[in-house]
Image (cartoon, rainbow, N blue to C red; front, side):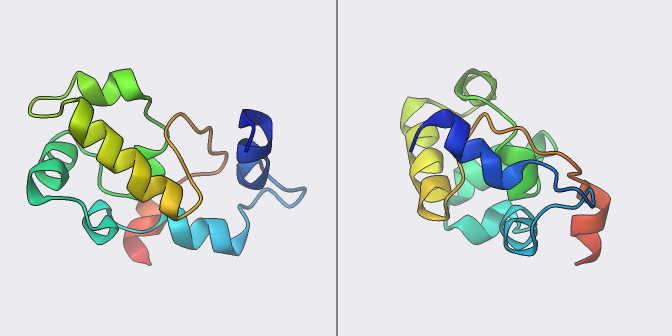
Length: 102
């Protein structure tokens, strides 16, 4: 999938809301991705609680975190790609507070 196509489902629609399927995916908590506890703890330690928070980071952002190396980033990417998202995405209308209430 090319990068432009990967971003299209995440663009804002005319009514300004993310597609409901996309909203459900990005509202998942990082611990629901099946990541090792060490990775989850590293992400949550810097405030990355939801997939929506995570996909807006790039590989370098993650590698700069304590206890996160290339192997962890590779595993995170594979788990994200399994649910049709990836690192480095731009989400319009992402609201962590709204995700917390779901």
